[in-house]
Length: 462
Image (cartoon, rainbow, N blue to C red):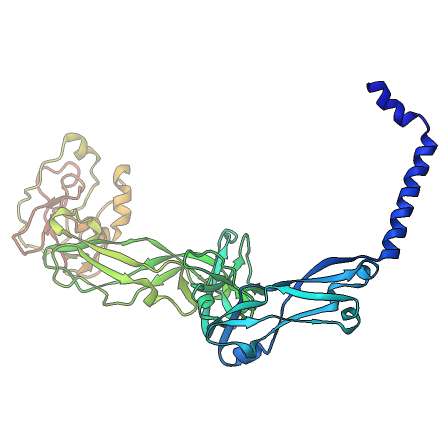
């Protein structure tokens, strides 16, 4: 059976080809001679006429269908001559009524009308929806994407224009939550300029697609300022003095530095922000004083804070008894000349020096009758040479008896300071009185009794 079917296509192949050709020829002759009528159709857009009359009335409209299907009868021989351009489908908005139903009109080209018959369309009537139009202005916002280069900051984008007017149906305008542009600032270190496309965003901050009835200016010019940054320290002076017995130990600021930006020539002129006097008043206080200062109010002209914040400033107050004053804070000492010859010399109450100290003590001559004190510098021990040089005025001999000499050496005025053994005595004075120092000359070598002469009295503060 299978071989028989195969043989049908293998046997008498030329005869079979001729048979097919004759059949096609007969079909073609019959069709062209009889010219039967067939049904054909085209689909085309519906044109809207006089739609501007509704637009001028502040209305927008939409059609529930924008296309129409046109059917017609045509002879087979003329079928190829009928094209979609042979028809014109439209609606006349002057036919609009409260019901919203508008008929669809179909016009046939006169040349095609002679070749076809039975023209009909679907739909024959369409529904027109109208809506009030609205005009609304939106401020244009700019979103900066990316991070500028290190040490630089981007500030608010400048736009031209700053607002955009949107015109369209109320329902479409209601979809718009904001209008804005996006500017890329990745790695920038200088001011950027350009043009950006305006986009509309919904309540979820997503880009929304509007109908063709909505119109607005789609492009705006922008300038993105980029500035260099710098850290500045804060300096605040104090006013007044704390309560008696208390002292100011320091001023602390938090933060210690603030980040600012501005033009390069302005940044280069400043390293510190100096706050005015009177902000931190510690008059009569006995505890810490804390204030909060809005730094942006005291910035030099042309500088701006990167982040607006207040600085906390604390003045630390402590009791003076908690402090140990240094020797340098005591007043200078005044050494008076010894009394005239024959005056009495008070007995020294200083501790007796050791034998080694007596051996190394400098030789000092007894005062002469004219009240002079002579010192021998030949036997000054090495360990006292520095003290001897720093207090040179003590060992100078006045030219006139009874002449006063004033010293600026701190060794002569500091209570408790070590002196040469057997030469000086320090003792506390009465409350509120200066401390007096009595200097008694050493006896000459070999002498068994005290040398005659006067004494030197050191009175700090005189």
